[in-house]
Image (cartoon, rainbow, N blue to C red; front, side):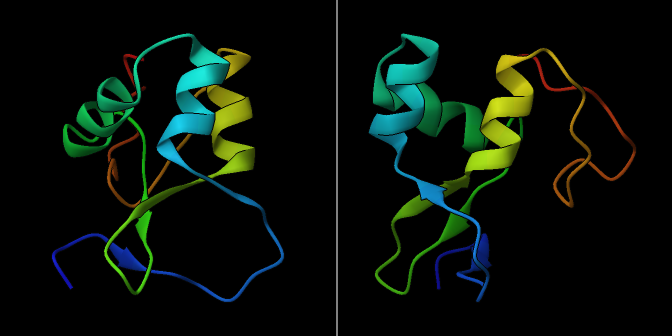
Length: 79
């Protein structure tokens, strides 16, 4: 793997960078940059593609602070 987490076995829906970008009304490359900077956590598919947890994305849209393994000190994302 090239970094990030491996896809987990869970029932939570995973969103593509394009789907996240549409929700935030930004370019998909912006979402990828946010993930690389640790502003939003992502996981990697076995093929190396980024996916984002739907619950975390919607929490960020609501302006809620999301604690992730990428931000263990609780820093809020600056999305």
